[in-house]
Length: 129
Image 1 (cartoon, rainbow, N blue to C red):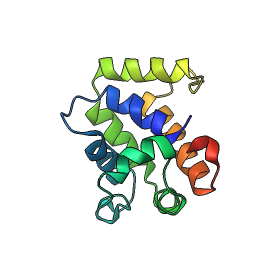
Image 2: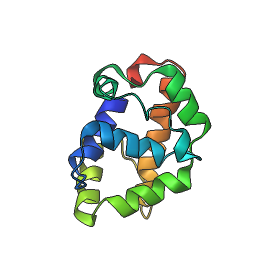
Image 3: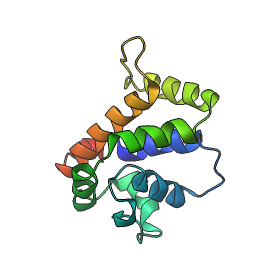
C-alpha cells in the first residue's frame, strides 16, 4: 500500500471538513513527537503530489525517526467515528493490509500500517511511495 492510498482511505472517512493538504498536515503533526516540527507544514500544493508520487525520502526519514505511536493512535481514535473505523478496516482488508489478531485495536492496526509505509518511504522503496 502506498502513502497516497493510505491517506486517501483515512481522508475518505474523515468528517473534519478540511482539504486533503490540510488533512495530510494534521495527520503528520499527530504522528510525530513534536508537532511543531512537521516537515510538511509549508509544502502547500505539493501535498497533492505526495498522494501520487509519494512522500519524499527526507521527509519520510524525519517522520519515521520522530514517530510517536501513542499520539498517532490517540488521533485515530478521537478523529474517526465508530462507523468510519469500520469503513477504514474494511477498505484496508480489501487491500490485504489487515491481518489483525482478534482483539487488536483498529488504531494499532492503522499505526502499524502507517509506520511500515513511512519506514519504506524513508528507505526509498518506490513500492510504498
